[in-house]
Each structure stands twice: as C-alpha cells, then as structure tokens.
Length: 120
Image (cartoon, rainbow, N blue to C red; front, side, top):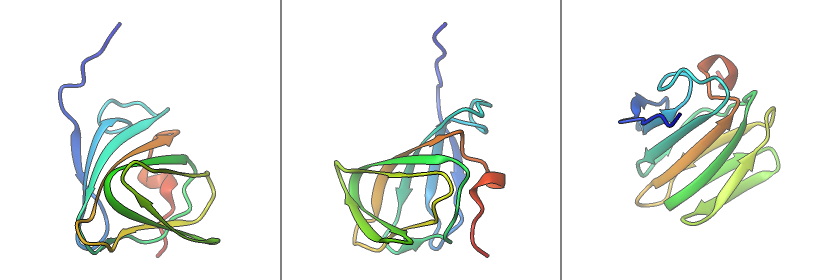
C-alpha cells in the first residue's frame, strides 16, 4: 500500500555553521532501518568532522558544490553530479564554495548516529 510522507523530520547536523537535514525516510522520520533519504541544505563555509560510517552513502548534488574529502583525495561534486561512499571508507563533507550546496543523501542501511563513527 502506498504511504504518503507528508513532511520531513528536520534535524540540525553537527558542523559549523549548522546545515539543515530534512529526512523523508529513515530511522527518525519513518522508523525504517533499511534506508534513509534526506535533503540537505548546507551554507557556505559549512564543514563537519570526518566519519567512517557502517553504511553506503549515495549523494546527488542538486545545486552548488559539495567537497568530499577521502583518504585518496578530494572531489568537488557539483549540481547534476553524484558521489558514492562505501561503508567503512573515511569521508569528510564540506561546502566551502560560495552559495553552499543543496543535495540528496541516500544511506543503506539507514543513517544512525551510532553507526556514522564521527572523528573526535
């Protein structure tokens, strides 16, 4: 049966300055541990601690530029592009470019503060 999700659950993310996360599907919004789907709005200059998550993360940038730092180097992912980070891979996201970024993140299994393993 189809299930309408009338509005996302809005979460403030760690990082400076804070970004907004609007989770439509996931552990918080729909109590779904299998997948999370969230829309992010990150301001110019936002950055967060590095992490080594237990989930695969697929990120589609709708507009702006997302900087994705890994142990192999840094990618600039711009509007219309996507990036995949495998579970267990170290990654740090930021939006240093003017205008920040608007993007969608899909995590499998769903994002959890207990499985993201952020750097100290």
